[in-house]
Amino acid sequence: MAIALRKPAEIEKLQKSNQIVAKTLNYLKENVSTGMSLSKINQMGEDYIISCNARAAFKGLYGFPAGVCTSLNEVIIHGIPSDKKLKDGDILGLDIGVELDGWYGDSAITIGIGEISKEDEQLIACAKDALYHAINIVKAGMRFKELSFEIEKFIKSRGFQPLKDFCGHGIGKSPHEDPQILNYVEHGSPKSGPKIKNGMVFCLEPMICQKSGKPKILEDKWSVLSEDGLRTSHYEHTIAIVNNKAQILSQENN
Image (cartoon, rainbow, N blue to C red; front, side, top):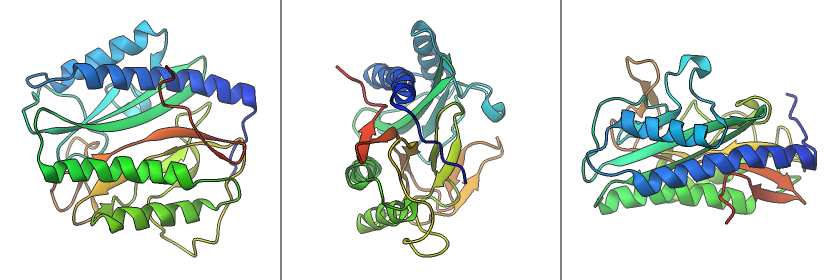
């Protein structure tokens, strides 16, 4: 496994692409509303990215048809935009990738539409809190598996389950690079495997299921659900390890 170590100038370039991701997500969060179609939301996101002189990195990636993954209610990741319209009480995952000057950015949020249930609030909070918990504890010298172990422990402490078979990932000159960062420990001890080092840039993305973490993929070959068929949530940031700790690249700088 070859995990790239980025120079400060390269991290700066990655931050520029990630800033566009952050701005696009914030723009959508502020403007998405009840009655809007998923296709309309995708178009808004793509247009905003273009207005920033960047490219929607997901469009055409591995054959994906859109620039914004719109994952509604039970869909946890890779939701394809459609004519389906948002209703009050829905929850919507928005996952965006951007390419700027050959460098990639990636981030995701889950938002409530109108008034949502207390249960859905807790579901969304688990994904967001698990992400920031991971960001707060990650440091140079820690093993990736230790980080996965801590993410899994956090998710389960809230009464939820991590989605299996999907993971966070390295990012740089490609949208997906080594390493793969699971939200659970699969093989071996948390004290095994590669260590986190200064200069590494990667995406952390807790994906939260309610009862079962076993994935089910719909006939569209993209949309991922839990086999329990219940609602799900997803949060993601791109981070760089600088001075032994995490620096969030996909967070809008005011």
